[in-house]
Length: 134
Image: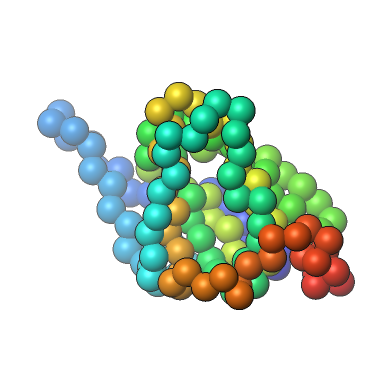
């Protein structure tokens, strides 16, 4: 996979004076079925998260509250994305390195994943990841 495969996905937003609603259906609104959902919160100022790539996992990152940045690398190129709306997600396919930082106060990063947690799906060392991309 390459950075060109990563993209923002605008999610449906149903506006109502009582409050807005956004729903996400796996395989319809996003290009994979959802098997796991997790979220990052209370990230201390100046901290970063992620710092890894997945061999097979597809993910959608959403800023449910606040904002944060995701820097993606595919072994040859790098691109930085800013997330700050709960009705936009960033789709990241397998074999893309990601770093998440610049968390605002009160930020909540929700991640939808195509599979259950599996440690063997991770590249946690960038040099091993880069070698696998060649």
